[in-house]
Length: 358
Image (cartoon, rainbow, N blue to C red; front, side):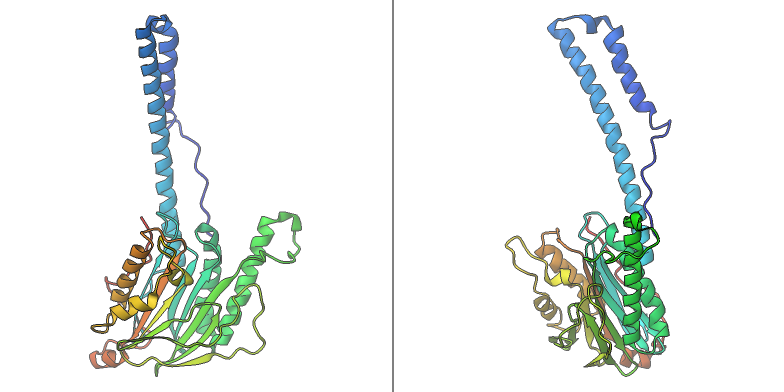
């Protein structure tokens, strides 16, 4: 569990300046003959002294609060980097790029989650959106991603992965409800955090490029093939994880193939729900069509193009967390260059990292 500690009590060093300012004010009031006079000049001087004392105290408190804020942001960034770790630039011949934009100004912490892992079953990808954002959603993100990172390797099909994620989410919500309502004691709460849910998309891309998916209330990704931009599929998704149990039979939906050069653009609903000052929704398809108009762009270029358009559309103030994950099938070129070894990742410096609004 990741915890943000409370602000520490002021140390002796931190209390020196307020004490000095207070002593100056008291000494002037009771020790200076000028402070005892009733003339206009004496009153002006007295007011100036107390104004200076008050200003000094305010400046000192402001600096202390800014130090605490910077410390909290450093802790939040560290927590986010552990939970939502940067993805490798290549996975089993797929070029990967991902980034997140938090709705909370100055924070790197959001309620969106993503991960991509090369396994013996193929590359498995998860994209999800936890209800809410900020530190309150970080525990749920950690529970879901932790379960996915284990289940992706262990389960032979993504239906088994989804059931593991459902159990992990239910267990996390029970533990959170027990912590929030200690009167329950050791008993299981009847409906732990009933309003909590997670939209989730699971993808599996095998060695031949065939794509299988399970969707729990999440937007379907877009497939970019040449200059075409189209939804991966239009199948009705399952309900989000949390409020309703999964069906007894879970069959992954086959969504065609990701041919060499094709891209998949996964995103959270904060992207298409983003509005401008006139209330108009963000058109992700239009931005993607512009991105592929001249030539097939790299995943990193797609990320930069979409986020630049999003910030312009929302005037730099998005109302919800946003995350994008782009996959491009480079297996044809990888085999010819000898850099596409299955299950390996090669480091690079141009892969975008999770980001935040400053």
